[in-house]
Image (cartoon, rainbow, N blue to C red; front, top):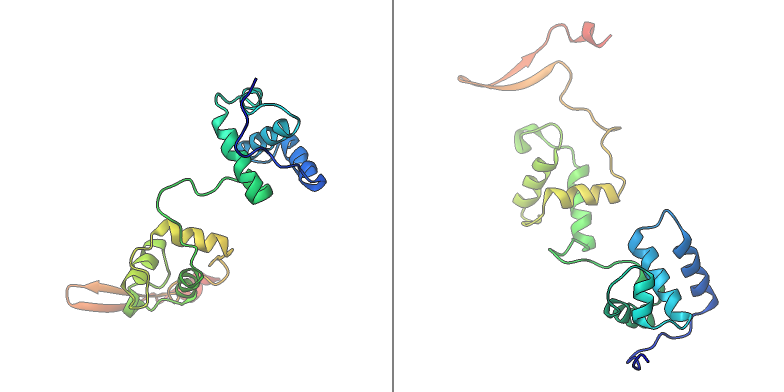
Length: 185
């Protein structure tokens, strides 16, 4: 006979039961969410934590205990995984705004050394700015831009066509291509 649990599963509402049943049968959701939904449904049908774990393909009922305790407090949010460790992500709205503001700014070749941003140059500019982010990574910049559906494909201008600034032994020189107009057409 299984021992008494410190925090048994609370009764499921009809909406929660419907959502968990749908999630347990889906083919498109992440596997961990499907497994957690199955575990909660098995426990709600009266299975012990150990039995539910075995039926869902798990070895131990300890994870089920933690899942049930989290479900009792958080509800359906317990099914989705939380941050798994490692360095904390930038959830600060100010930092996200600062990254997007810098990415939207057109770089100046004299100050930034480029006519178009790359992730590395954007990281360098953000770290060097007085109001910047000294520990921001290129991955964080990329992720913030992806989350904001940011793209520079429509606004990409690059250098002025037919002109380039080059460093020579004698100094900085502006090089112009005389055949620019014929190449455009």
